[in-house]
Length: 281
Image (cartoon, rainbow, N blue to C red; front, side, top):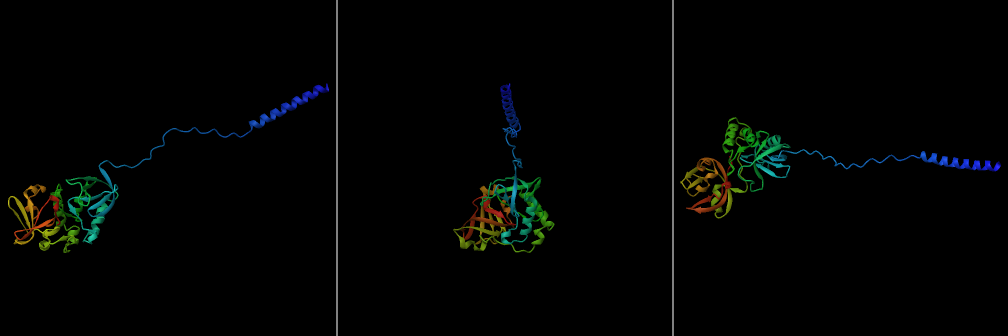
C-alpha cells in the first residue's frame, strides 16, 4: 500500500513540473508581428513646371538684358537701355524697372530673324502675360527704340512708343535732357576714319546726308561729303529694312562696323551685312 502511494506521489510531482513549465512558456512576452513590406512605389515629389513656351527669369543684368533659369542670356530686340557699366544717365532706373517687370517671373520669348547676337545672347521680344516688355520700357522712357537689322518686326511700333514717351517727357526724356552722349570706347568718330584705312573698325556718327543712286545708298557723315566718311549700302541689302535706308537713317546717329577703304579720296565703309549697322538714338 505504501509502495502504491509512493508511485502516486512521483506521478503527481512529474505532472506538476510539466504543468509549471507549460505555464511559464505561455507567459513569455512575444515580439509583435512584423509589418508587411510594401511593394508600392514611393510617391513622386510635386515639382512646379512652366508651360513649354515660358522661361523663368533668374537675374536682371540691366534695362535690356536678363538671364534665364537655364543660364541663357537674353538681349531684348529693338531697344537700347542706358548702360550701368558706363554710368549712363538713367541706367539704375532702367535696370530697376526691368527687374520690377520680369525678375523671378515666367516670361514668353519671341524670336525675330537672328537666334543670337555676336556675344551669344538670345535675341528676343519678351512678354509677361500679355505685356510686351520691350515696348513697355520704351513707352515709359526707360529705354530708346533702336533698329537692329535684320530684326525689325516691331520697328514701327517701338518708334511710335518712343515718340509717345518723348512727347510726354517720360523717364530719360526728362531726366537726361542735356546729358552728353557717350561713345563706345571701341568705336571711332568719323573724322578719325582716314587714319584707319585698311582696318576693320566700328564708327559712330550722325547721318547728315543720304543719297540713292539707284544701285547704292550713301550715308554721309558731313555735308559737303567729299573727303569725309561715307557708308555704302548695296541694293541687295535694301530689303533688310521695312523703310528705304536713305529715309530710315537720315538724321539718325548710327553705329557701323566694317573695313575702311579709300575711294576718290574719301574714307568709305561698304556694308557687309544687315547687322553691321544700328541706330543709336
